[in-house]
Length: 68
Image (cartoon, rainbow, N blue to C red; front, side, top):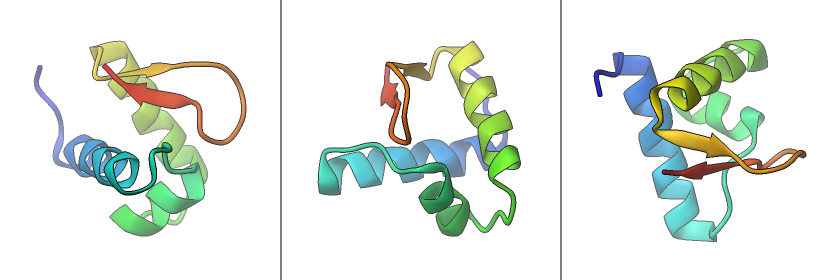
């Protein structure tokens, strides 16, 4: 799987937060961690990571992704 630098940053952020808290970070938390100002930019990258098979959406709400 070939990730962009930004996708790699987001995936690392998700892994670290899940390891620390047991929950996926929110869009706002991801944006703050990787230096993005737009939640829509985070959402776009999450959709790309999902299409690549790196993460999966599991329901609705703020913390809906899990690592694959």
